[in-house]
Amino acid sequence: MGSLTTPQALPKRSRRQWPGRILYGSSAIAIGAVLGLAISFRNLPDVRLLRRYVPSQTTYIYDINGELIASLHDEANRETVPLDRISPKLQQSVLAIEDSGFYNHLGIDPVGIGRALLANFSSGGVVEGGSTLTMQLVKNLFLTPDRNIGRKLTEAVLALRLEQVISKDRILELYLNQVYWGRNLYGVEMASRSYFNKSAADLDWAEASFLAALIAAPEYYTPFDERDRLDPQRLERAKERQRLVLQRLVAIGQISPAAATTAANQTLQFGEITSFRPSQSPYVSDAVIQELAQQFGRSAVVQGGLRVQTTIDLRMQRLAEQVVQENYQRNRQRGLRAEQMALVAIDPRTHFIKAMVGGVDYRTSQYNRVTQARRQPGSAFKPFVFYAALATGKYTPSSSIADTPITYQLGAETYSPQNYDRSFAGNMSLTSALAQSRNIPAVRLGQTVGLDRVIEICRRIGISSPMQPVVSLPLGAIGVTPLELTNAYATLASGGWYAPPTLILQVRDSQGRRLLDNTPRPQPELQSKAVAQLNQMMQAVVTSGTGRSAQLNRPVAGKTGTTSDERDIWFVGYTPELVASVWLGNDDNSKIGGGATGGEIAAPIWRQFMQKALENQPVSPFPKP
View: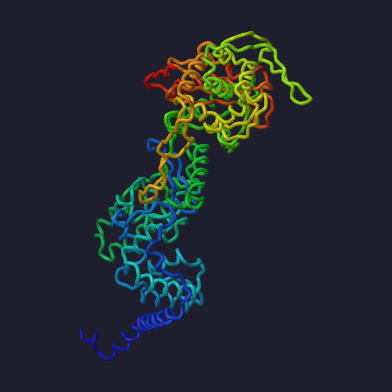
């Protein structure tokens, strides 16, 4: 007992205290240096900006029923959450391993800085950080990753300033939403959902301590390999770091040794890394991104954390993709030289796009033929000419039109339209002429009602592609996109009501505030009586004309389209509930050949899609004229 207090023992105890005295002396010097620099560092970033700072977040695209189609993000795949939606167990685990004195310091830890300065001075370089959580936050947000004394002092100055203007809880919230957790996952919510398939609010001690273990070196400690597969060696490395976190929690009195042992031995149920998950329907997500970028700018799309509800019905979308794939393979087996196909479906009551397939294989071609390819519609353009005639009030579906030879003088040249089969049928009704897709009656009608009038009608219902009043215009001598043509038919299906087609129903920000609302606002653009008459005539196309292969167990109207040079074949048809178009052709505009027609090839594909798309929907008739 006495020997512990003898004078001889004092020098030994004094010598043992030298490292501590050096440490605290270094701390005092560090604090003094930082306080002095805080006065002179006048050109540093303004930390007050963090009062309203919102980290970049992942944008989510959903179908009309709330099913996820795609997530979009720049480098940071992140979803932010408030501190009260982050498990206290995770908060304590992170603080235990990263900054156990967080709630007691003013942004810098004197003992930690002193220890780091002493270690760095002894080694002649930067070997220890000594950073507080606040210092880590300002480094991530404001500074470069350089490791040097000057950068460290700048961190300290900014940390001191930050703690003067933002609460501790807000700093912790920003940190947990900002920090990187490996595998392109930023922020604790995205990490929790990917690693454990649960919200950050629901993490237990084992999961919380495991995530906290990753922060020091996320790509080193993540248990997933480059292919996002669980790797046993990586997992053991992460578990070793997790045990260190649990030891720190025990040391600072946050959990008992028994609880730490239980957490360390708990078998973790890992989720699935979703950072690099491809879109379920890439043609759709690309088109949505394009529409969003026009509204909000590209950076807002990939960084703004938007919540986008589209008009797409994923059930219908998957069906459309399946139909395109099956028929592409079937057509190849039968020797049909049509290397591409497009299908788009629109609800005529809202003009919402319900399904969109822009090609046979997105992996080999991202070109969206629904929205970007202008192709000749052939006879699928004729309904607009017939509508123009009916709208004059001088024609009815039973009015007679001549299907006889005719020649037009075009300057020094002449033009003599021909029917597809090169025959002539004499006088016939407008209904028969449209149902049998006779070319000469369509050209005659175009000349009678005026091609400028036809173009005007097309403009009113959304066909914006270039059109010239040439004699052959009624035969589809223009280029239109499938989306333009299908939405124009949607105006016919709705009784003459037009609205621009859209993929997006509404957009909200990450806080739930509505940024865009595309509630349907159709306007009457066509005469209802003339539209009803035309719908009656176009039903005859399916019941007894060129579109018989499109028949369903419900009223159907539509029109085939086949260009005379066999480069484009179409069927565009509708019921009162849904409009869809099918196009087949080649990107190099080469001939399909083989006598392929819209009625023979495109109409059965349309029927296959519509039959399943309208399953369990009640049958509705078209309004009678």
